[in-house]
Length: 129
Image (cartoon, rainbow, N blue to C red):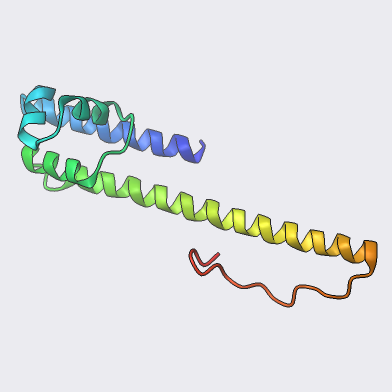
């Protein structure tokens, strides 16, 4: 399963949970939308897991459906996984850039006898990679 598929699956599962809780409460999408102050299409998009919505959306759903924060916790988990995937991708990209730079230096040394070189690598000040 790819990273994107993991997030997509988590969004769909959270959406199914929202839909089940809404139906259990006897609410239509429109009625829930009115209770939470979001549009019916926002509720629909959330229920099918098409895109991540703001934390405020999930907090409002938790309050309206009296879930004790279960939906917001699910949204937070998705955000944490997405953030971890982005950090891993940034680190992999940084490592690839370093490897290319070292390979280019080695190739230049072989071609022209360059004596200068990389004396050390520093971590990225933004991501630590």
